Image (cartoon, rainbow, N blue to C red; front, top):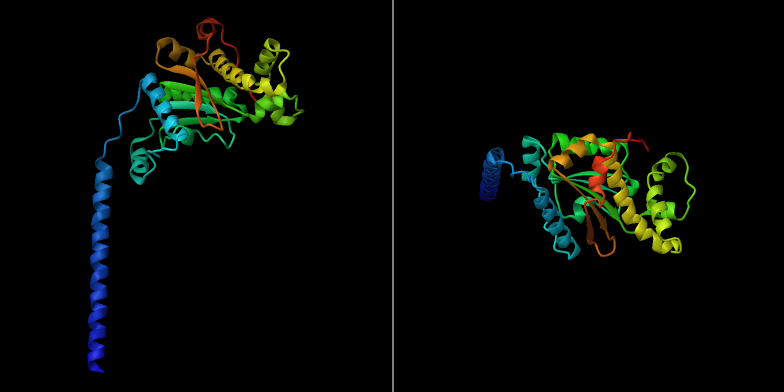
Length: 262
């Protein structure tokens, strides 16, 4: 009986000692990680629009072929951003559609992209102000207006859907793009008009931004940023790049127009 009690005590002591050693190892490991995080310098910011665009293109290519890296999503990145602040390299105005999650589409992580999402990727007062903040205060070198195939907001305008309330005010920002496409292609069916209207809507949003934002105009004129349009295909996952607005030079020379609300 005494032997059984003795062995029981030994085993109990061994378990306590093992627990203490494990706790000590965990504490030491945590200390090393904290020291490492505190001493880690933030990654250098991307300040060139061409480099920023190349990052987005490479990330989208990875996503489309199923070879995502899922960068910048770990605890070290979170700590870095908390300690040193955010330094995104691109601002993207995209649609609120759940099929177009911007960071996933471009295989980017925390702190990489400054994202503004709104139905129909329209640009009015709130969106323009948010972009101005990104350009002026975070010195973001690249702004993207990202449309997508099968956009419900654009489709609603093409089909003449009768909206009301705030939705009606929002889709009014899309109507000029649809009217332009319809005037150019009066014989096309609604089904064939939609992809053309999606692209024109991207250009129209770019036009709205340049027309109403003095901050963006100044940055474009000074060469501190680029404004680029793009359309994402929700089926193939590929982004088609439209480049700068074809009339950017003329838009920059035109008078500033007051911004509008949704």
